[in-house]
Amino acid sequence: MKIVLASRNRKKIGELKTLLSKHFAEIEILSLDDVGITGEIEEDGNTFEENALIKARVAATSGYIGVGDDSGLTVDALGGDPGIYSARYAARCNYAGDHDDEGNNQALLQNMADVPTQQRTGAFVCCIACVFPDGRELTVRGEARGRILTAYAGQGGFGYDPLFYYEPLEKTFAELTPDEKNAVSHRGIAIEKFAAALKELGTGL
Image 1 (spheres, rainbow, N blue to C red):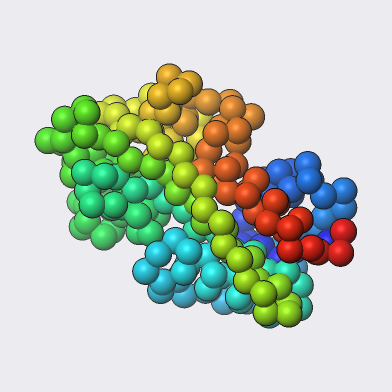
Image 2 (image 1 turned 45 degrees about the vertical axis):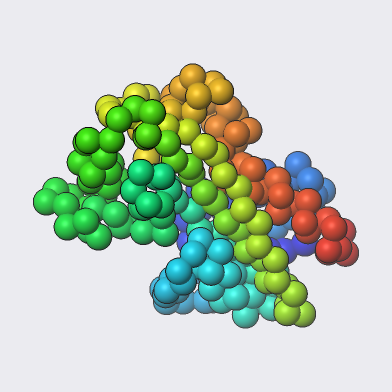
């Protein structure tokens, strides 16, 4: 089975292959570059699901199964922000510093400065969309709930991981090993649901 992931990120492609290989004996994950799809994909949806589908539909123009994902952090006290703007939250907030992972984290801390501990709840969300060459579409959603800290903890992970405290393991996502994180993360949960949905729909494997 060949899948085109709407990404050029080799790390993300490798991660998807590793996780799906547990469920399918033979699977090949291709990038947009591998199938000659150039240019940037405009993610103008209003939800994680919509943006994931936009990307998956582009990938499916290759003639193979197209897969797209969209993920981010939602914070209850901020009305769901950063949400679909998680990767560019600092810019959206006009944060004075750099508009990178560090800037996004600092913008988040700044906007939550007055939020008490018991109200600092939120969730990492990952939506995976799949579009088949015959037009069938599906989306799945994975969530991991936790609490937003007031200071970083841990050196691993990326993005908001050092601020996201996962209470069942009493660690931030940045303190988890890759295997621990894959077992409980929003992306790990979404990929498990995605694999189950592929099997249910039938892929010829």
